[in-house]
Length: 220
Image (cartoon, rainbow, N blue to C red; front, top):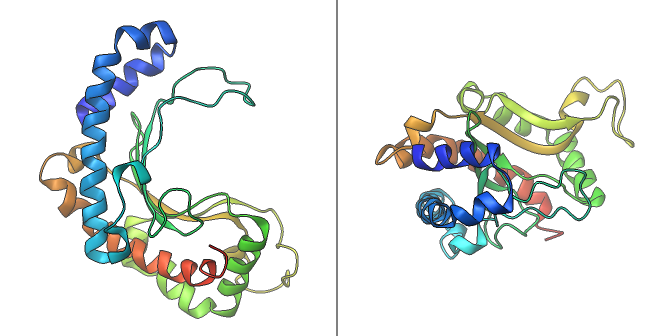
């Protein structure tokens, strides 16, 4: 883990094609290690969510090269590594999955996904509204919150359209992204501690994902 994070830290200070070309072999070693973590995460998730078992590393990892065509930031390389185990279709599926983010000073694990199309997001909110007691039993469970203190991302300032503003649990419907995340110390993910550290997080993530995915299955 330290090897990966050290490389990313240096890359963030030298984010240009010339430097990267000179250090391509170092990057390939980092990629090899990250791919190994992806294999281990796929296998770990499959012990809880069996639909993950057929996924390959390529289904769960991303290129380090940034798409700068429509961005004001023209730096060519990402300075983080993301591993998204998203059963059953992989990273391009609409369903919620299990995401490990590796970045200097920002290592975290998350459940869910981001960027749902508007009809899917509306259906998720409707499901939360209709089954609020079940949803709260998951996200307000102290065991869940210990691992995922952050639930929901990029919230609306007001109630989403179509839902009563005075509903007592309206804040549960405001996120634009239904995700849950929590930080991890990089040292806790080194060597043999990788699986034992993440297993409780995967189990809690499965509860969250299963609730959301019950709705998304009609779209995916």
